Length: 407
Ligand SMILES: [Zn+2]
Image 1 (cartoon, rainbow, N blue to C red):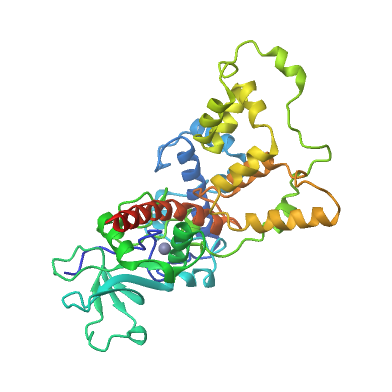
Image 2: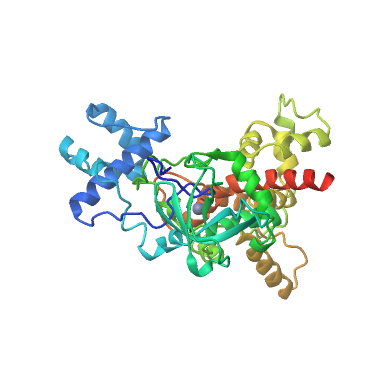
């Protein structure tokens, strides 16, 4: 049965095929768009998901503008916009044409489906094949890719919402599938995926229009796909490579230190600590605590505990956390390796002239999927967002596979 709503990529939850509208470049339209994104950015910072400005007092507005000086110009631009203008913009959802390019959305058209062929016969087999998303929950497998001559009907329903007995297919972008295979194996190797195992995992997670997984803070995948202004990063290709060296150079980040390894904090601080509950804990225990905390929380803890600061104030800790916490930052190993080589050429022994803590903090911030973001880090942020569902699926995949092998 054809559903009354659209279905989305099983891995990123975004549109199958390029259904994205780029908005008008007219000054009025751009002004309304950016004012709205600025207001929503503020609303989200205060904990509200949506925010309407019609009843905003001058005082409230001034507070809002003061709290986000970097967006002040955009936020101020809504002066004089009447409700009709806002409604007009609200009824015309589209992405910012300065933030996204038409060609940058091509990856959305490259869609494959995981399904079962000849399921009624003893020839039943699982496939991952190129497909075309038609509408609602219908996909057509590409005939050129059809190796089974007996399979006359190329139409499949996605996500099992059909009342037909046919098993559903699970559609996804090829780029997202590459990421999933990386989450499963550590490298891109789609051929190695045991399709029956993956099918069972996705089938168990099936939830009407996508999977029952946390796809991050995006609202585009609704009954119909909505190009939500401010969520441009969610449709940016997650496998495009970022030139990390170039970005670091551009940011002129002081990642390099001229003085040694900074293994310990200034010694005079130790005597000034009056009470630190972590001081009496053995190193092994604090190590376990730190291992289970996200990097952001470690940094927060460092502000309250001198002991924890001292025990994490070394490059090897942060270098390890970079690898542990940012497996989706595929550009990082090459960057570090290149840096290592350059040091060896200079005759330096240890790769400790990068301030890994600073590097961690900078990367964590820049790659964070954030409403209203723009620029070169959008693809990496989207990759970081998609990595969450991929890891969840990868863990389930391994669990099912281990169980199968035990039998
Ligand atoms: Zn996807």
